[in-house]
Length: 238
Image (tube, rainbow, N blue to C red; front, side):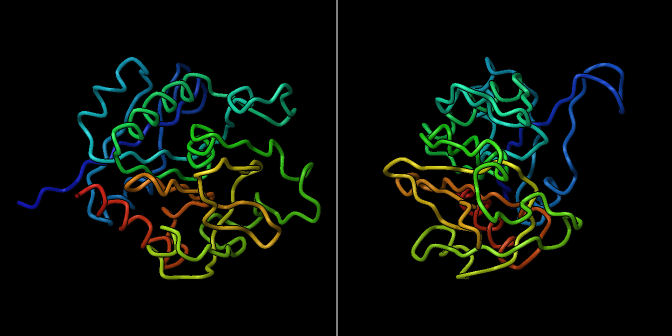
């Protein structure tokens, strides 16, 4: 039997309501289905920061998913929090621990949407806390049409990992975010930009596979999305 790489995906969490009156974990199925389609075996990780190293010993790669919450602005040096910012402190604490551990190990990492923002902050970036307040003539980055459809296109930076993986200079993506990477430190590379100038992806060229994208490739909007997941899982097999 072919060994399939194990991909750890931290769960989302809610304090209660809907599924259960008590606190519960959840994750959209298409994250797991996209990993399986790409040849990996997903396992879902609950939020125990003190178990991060043990989790890392069980997986071959780490996928940080998005969610309806934001990175704590204090983590990138902001002294004020925009009124739209929503925190999930337990999830963020766990993802900080496991993402830092994965990066230190040279483990393949894929950050999606809010996961890309967290990855960027860990590597020294700052964030725009609310795009409509900071970007003139901004696109609708929280697109009004379904997430299963494109919201806009991105232009890919030539020579980046994202460019090598997708083989595309430009392709359509969906868009479901009100924050974005604002500035990156030396050593971190911007790999994609929206038509309004908003940063849509970052990567660490000093790492074997450390890629973040602002959109959701698990929806498979274009062949480029499938190529991103396939390349990530292949890297986890190495």
